[in-house]
Amino acid sequence: MKRAVITGMGAITPIGNSVHEYWNNLLQGKSGGTAITRFDTTNYKTKIACEVKNFNPLQYMDKKEARKTDLFTQYALAATSECMEDSQLDLGKSNRNRIGVIMATGIGGMITFEDEVLNFGRNGENPRFSPFFITKMIANMAAGQISLRYGLHGINYGVISACASSNNAIATALDLIRLGRADIIIAGGSEATISKVAIGGFNATKALSTLNDSPETASRPFSQDRDGFVLGEGAGVLMIEEMEHAQKRGAKIYCELAGYGAAADAYHVVATHPDGLGAKLAMEEALTDAKLKEQDVDYINVHATSTPVGDISECKAIADIFGNSLESIHLSATKSMTGHLLGAAGAVESIACVQTIVNGKIPPTINVTKVDPEINPKLNITLNKPLDKKVNIALNNTFGFGGHTVTTVFKKYNL
Image (cartoon, rainbow, N blue to C red; front, top):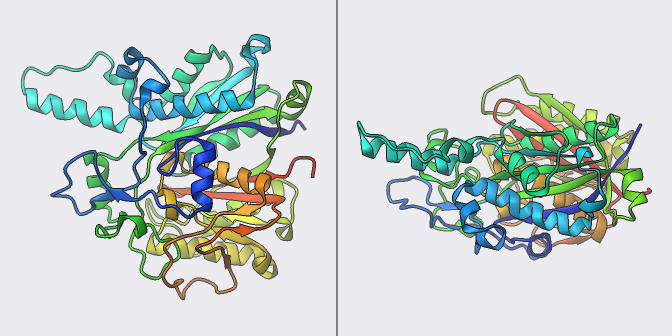
């Protein structure tokens, strides 16, 4: 069976607009939480989010292209630009028919949709729509625009499974590489939903934190006083390449994408199974797929969004699976710093997993005042400060509304 490796990465996040900046700020425990600047939050229960800062689309595209693309596509193009440069792939010497793109999103062009529908309402019986409305809004357009920019003729589509979306994209890319359907897949996710509709909608489900007086500390996974997730935005993109193809071109190889598991809670449209059934199945399948044992795992980037129920169920699943290995496996919730990037979360957190392997450092979980007593005390949660640790195997958990659960496995190259 063919094997896949990571040969390039790119990131746009609430704590940095490059992989280097994002990673350094993770290690420093920097929070991306701020008061929302995108719209007037006076009448909203939640007034905070983890916005991307200092992003200028004109650094990545001209004005004409920027007018034709939603912010979520702009983030995807920006992260892909960094990924392509990082990979040092010479497209002139590559078979572009064998290079595909699979980009995920949870919601897609929400900002465009909101603007156009509100404009429709204001115009009453004489509605006017932008000719770019549909092509800006639809969720597959990040993948489409990336292929257009680089002339990539391989497999190309979008993936949607709520907050598990970009982990599903990465998992699908692995399958395609294994099957010999592509030499390279540009895979990841992008999200830009800090808007009136999204904040209002998530408030209606009572999913968001309302700790408005302390945006920097509002995302607090595992903490007894957590009250919901903080919405984030951004994009993460990875170049997933067939191992022999990467070796032949002399590519820089970060690590191996060794396997994945995917399952479903089949329990509730929003809430996770109280015993973490789907999470447990995904992690077990991931270990089987990667031919690993529980004691082989060094690090798990947990989904842990800071919701009262979700954090506990995931921890139960981890405790059930890893048993006697719990104390040797380190966990951290990087959402404590980035907020929850929805469909982009898996890709951005996968980059963190790759970096733990490359750099031998585990980023912390911040904002924990007191660990919830319902969480197994044997779980080795990295709090407040980064930890120096040799990491050979890293897992990334992502779970989404609808019961979707996906775990990906990253492995030290040539281990």
